Amino acid sequence: MSQTADVEARMGRAVEALERELAAVRTGRASTALVERLHVEYYGTQTPLNQLAGISVPEPHQIVIQPWDRGVLGAIEKAILKSDIGLMPNVDGTVVRLNIPPLTEERRRDLVKLVHRRMEDARVEIRNHRREAADTIKARERDGEIGADEGRRELDHLQKVTDRWIDEVERIGKAKEQEVLEVS
Image (cartoon, rainbow, N blue to C red):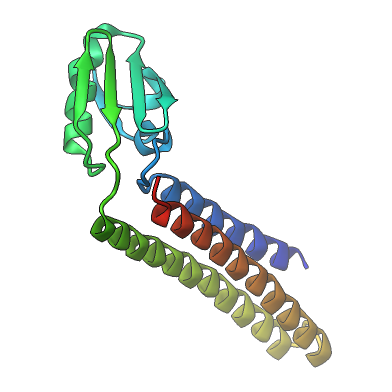
């Protein structure tokens, strides 16, 4: 059963990756996840923004980035402008402010499509893990390592694990979809 535990762990990692990707999808509300993963050119090295600055959400529609080194303000501004988050940074002395405008209905529909694409990618990855594990079980059955009954039990258990992770993808995706469609 250790192989099933391994497959289950890989399926779990696929769901965790989906959660990280969806956290970076912009909604009408401010979230530090929008900018945490941005990389900033800092003394010739691409450095994650959350290692260079404090990131906070003082209001529901604003993100404030306060760098620990004031000399990196311009690089942070440049990194935000080059990114695909679509926000205009306001450099205000020692901090960078990002105002989050309300989403248009068209942009909400686009974001829902993006959420659905990411969900489908996660489902495909989970199904690929299931297929690989099922192939291994069938090969063990062919080689005589396990009997037909045990092989069937392992395949049934594998399917239940797969269904559980697919349901988790659905739950996470529906929650994000509601968040995107919520008009604040």
